[in-house]
Amino acid sequence: MEITNVIEYEELAKKKLPKMVYDYYSAGAEDQWTLKENREAFSRILFRPRVLVDVTKVDMATSVLGFKISMPIMIAPSAMQKMAHPDGELATARAAASAGTIMTLSSWSTSSLEEVNATGPGIRFFQLYVYKDRNIVRQLVRRAEMAGYKAIALTVDTPRIGRREIDIKNRFTLPPHLTLKNFEELDLGKMDEANDSGLAAYAASQVDQSLSWKDVKWLQTITSLPILCKGIMTAEDTRKAIECGAAGIIVSNHGARQLDFSPATISCLEEVVKEAKGRIPVFLDGGVRRGTDVFKALALGASGIFIGRPVLYGLAVNGEAGIKHVLKMLRDELEMSMALSGCVSLKEITRDRVLTESDKIRMSLGLSSKL
Image (tube, rainbow, N blue to C red; front, side, top):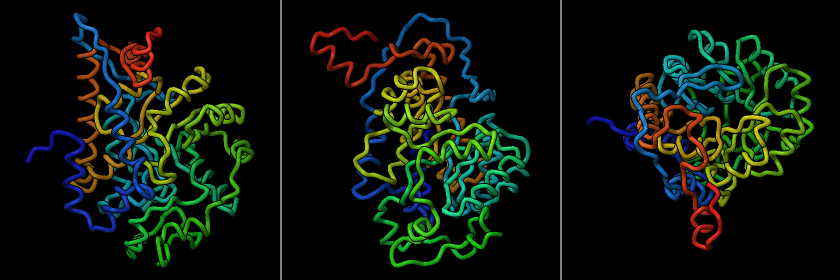
């Protein structure tokens, strides 16, 4: 069967992966309302296409923190990728570099920072969980710098692991032949079996629940790398992030894996963008499965988007080639969306190109839509 869209990769991955692994990658927290909403919120945003525009050439190139990339579609951090395929994060790194885009490596990767760097050239960010032992954090950040990573994506929404009931049912733990490679030498690479989720137990024992805004400032004292705050969803926290020196924001609800009944990320994006006022770039992850989704996020002010699960599903089905295909399909769909909307560059994807639920309400009340 020819795979024609990203969603089809998920169906194939479900058939191919062990149940515990697929469930870990795919599930959300509790009732999984936010998991569904991350997708459905995109479907409520409509296009306002412009016609009779010469779209012979459509340019999708952009830059992120000064680094030039081929398209505004990047790879989000996803943990334990060797559960999906023996090449794991190494395949993801090669696919991202081949596509001319950015890969973000998870702290909880099954390949080390250094192993990923050794795959060859590429622009890579490192996602950071702050451990109770700050010496571990210092070591990780230093290693990321030494290995040429270009930014730190600080996860700010995980003082505790959200209640993922399917992981509890499955007694999820890292398969015994794998380790959290970045922590191997610190004797923290293994995940013990637990009565519920081995990951939740591991995080509770290691991740610092006291993490606060002062730690964003502290991180800047131990690294010169730009820090992106990943997991911000409100204007108030946007303001705080800017005050604390963040170089950028990733609007994220952790793939709907933390607090259920949080809004979809695309529903929070404009609030964050309006508060940022162009002072720092705002990115988005969560629910992106189509090039049309990318276009909508850009129209609402995102500087780019990150994808997580689609990469895992492509990796599970066909390794590096699967990820390359996922990235190519999303790129081709974005290009098509731009052409059919009359946009030949990313800067032309402006707010007036889409119609949101709030726009529709204003128009029904006879208020100026001011698109």
